[in-house]
Image (cartoon, rainbow, N blue to C red; front, side, top):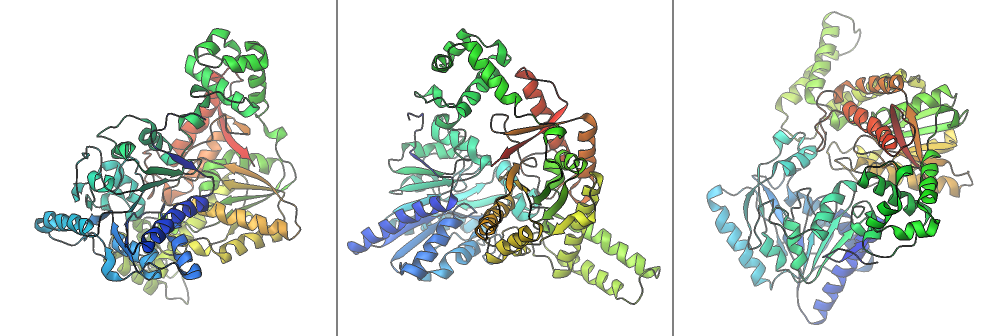
Length: 613
């Protein structure tokens, strides 16, 4: 397949495979250098994307004896100012996620300091560059990519010749970091970073990206022109750079999005639907009105040739899309259904309309909330509830307890708490209870009750921090035991994997592993439906089921979302979208229906989209 890519790209659906590929290359370089008695110099990145690589390197050290005694490392960047022991410090991140678990000498680890005075920054940066040169230069540089296209913290406007320096962080970058700092207003405004020239001097570079939210900037970096506003485009001039992507991050590359524009393709049904919908949207015509000229002018003559005429292919795609539309009469009836909700609002945000229809169809329903979602509750909400408890106690409505002392301890902790500090166990519990109560209130709107709610509180989430533990055996066991108890025939799972803190992706990992174990025990595999909604919606070409919602059903869904008052008006983790969750839902669901209308299909008020695995 030809492509427009100016940087070699490796794509794998499995994040573990990507991590293994990168770890393979690092190990190969280490062994090549060891054979000639040379040290290996690694440039390392932080963030969620490279953690898989670090875990694989740790495994190879522990299980296979891979030694890092002759490795020297230089990290890309650090927030400034930032104490090294802060939960947000890249210094702490690297020790917790790699250095403390391998045999690298501390003297061979180089991390940019976040505590130096401003007057000393320039000198420290020059010294950092000198140490890289003294080490013989970087053999292998590991990178992620930010939503602005930054590598390291080389924000828009960073020059090709830039070196290690103090930079002002872009507003988009600070907003992207808001999830870690409990609000963009708490995120640092500056950072120290290796420069573009420092990165380009590495002998080999690997850039990792995963998730739908990276697809647009990946395409810009890989296929676009070199641009001062997108630092990652400078990598196009590097002779040994490779992009390692999952299919979601690679989705907008031309070879995936519109492959017929770059090479001959083999037309199957799915590709035909994508191409005709793309053509309809490009020329602004309904599907049944597309002509031979429209196809010819947009490099789709071969598609017409396969089907014999424009009318034949138009009719095929029109009918294929129409068959995906399922009203209540075509949905499950009197079945056993579990909706797995990563947080205590994803259920009603993403499939509130479906939940209502399933209730009306007399299905046996269970909504399983996988995490407490407690980190996504503002402290001021806890203060309000603590005050509520104090007032109940004052008016002697609480008997035989120490409610007042409890509320005072909570209030005292919040008074001394700094942004980003881990909450006390008491505060975490209050936040958990707030979200549980909201979740029950939300599903009551669509006709369910507290008896239909199950709060799993998976262990991986219970760190008290935004950064979570890996999915472990206990997480999988809890999900599997629920499957064994309820024996669902249909399971709904969050398929939007771009939430700011990665919880949706981790929850799906636990469900996938649990279903595999469940089937291995001899149980029938449930039908699995993937929903989206909070962060993006399925495209009409990707969705396998489109569920119409009336104006009243959409109103009811929004009312259910309103019950999550801790997430209302200003959610702690809104991502890059300024809209409230109910506004996103309203816009996405009505836009999905509007797209079908523009394609020439029946007109509906709103629609939810699903992919059936």
